[in-house]
Length: 475
Ligand code: NAD
Image 1: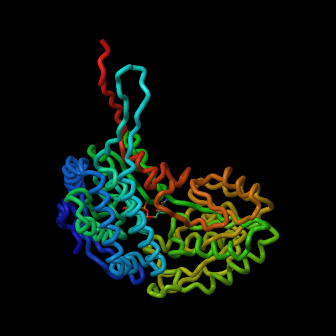
Image 2: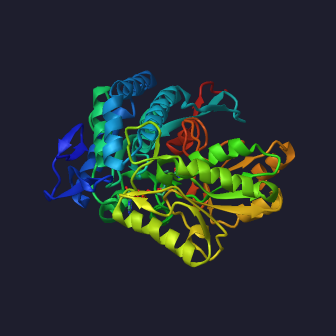
Image 3: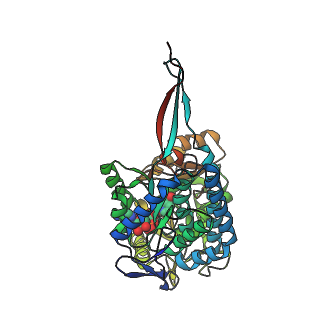
């Protein structure tokens, strides 16, 4: 039984209710978890606020030490975290290992950021005066995380706020609460003061607004679907709160006729099918210049047919179960809809238990759900294009703009693509799924608002103060 994590300990929920956290491979109960209420949110925010009053004064060397220790502990407990990722969200082990290394790197990079929360000395027109600016932490920060990369996202939504002297209330996905609890314990073991990191579990649809609108919450960091993100942005706008939104994607991978066919196929396999396509940066649209269209389709089909399915402990497995019945129905619906509207299904479309086989379409019309919406499953569509410019115009038809990639050796076309495509992240000769701790990670349009990353987050998580000191009085 998992209760909330408030003030450095497990705390029972106000109304004593629980919910079932299911293992998506079988839909059997993995854990019983406390169903949070608005009262629980208030309790957690108040604990975080109390902690903030002293944590804001903790020197950078100490914050640095805590974050480094947390990274070391995460590595030490690697096997346990990986097991949770396999059972709680159906991660194949290779993806779980990648989550581990990304989360650990993010903690380490955040430790380094504690010493980069710098101010400025400023020129002044007043003789005998020193003019400078400093940064202060903003207070209690809310982190709201999705189910698909819960370890990375719980760490991301905690590490930089803690590095910059803020405290955190985390509302993890109702599909992945256990991993968040384990992170709470990890921070405690690393020496984080009680109350600096809190976890309230429950259904975000019921208690999310209580968190976003609480007067002591100074900023909301949200990762999840575009619809919930838009709702949170509206609330924050009305209340004058900061928010950073990392949302969905309909990411394009482009192969031009001079590009490396085999590299593009490998990148498309990872891009489209990693973690059964449940990645915000998944390559769900692939545009191939006509001379390479047929060989590309053939090679991708062959690669997709040989991907490991189902056995999550096998490092060769790329496809695990889709997270829940609602999401499975969404994937089925996108496939059904495309087939009924004349799209050509090259492979996949069928299921083994809760795993959808890697699915490849072509001839997908703009009236298809698959063309416009995020499927969040192992389903991709390949489109022929006449030129780089044709690809750019099709890529930009989407309202999403998270990640895009292009395979070409033509420098000018590669840079034209990078300059003109509506996306927050562009990779030349690389897959659409990429992340590093210090980069400005995020998207435009329906894919997000603001960026996250150790360097750029310092700006969001601190408030400037201008200070002057008259040290010489002119007589
Ligand atoms: P979701 O939007 O359904 O849920 C995300 C979180 O929001 C959950 O914790 C949920 O409980 C909470 N929530 C729901 N209603 C809320 C409300 N009114 N107020 C506050 N919180 C609320 O998303 P999901 O299904 O868990 O995750 C998949 C989505 O996340 C996809 O769209 C994916 O692209 C996106 N995602 C984006 C990134 C990124 O970095 N851009 C990374 C991972 C996932």
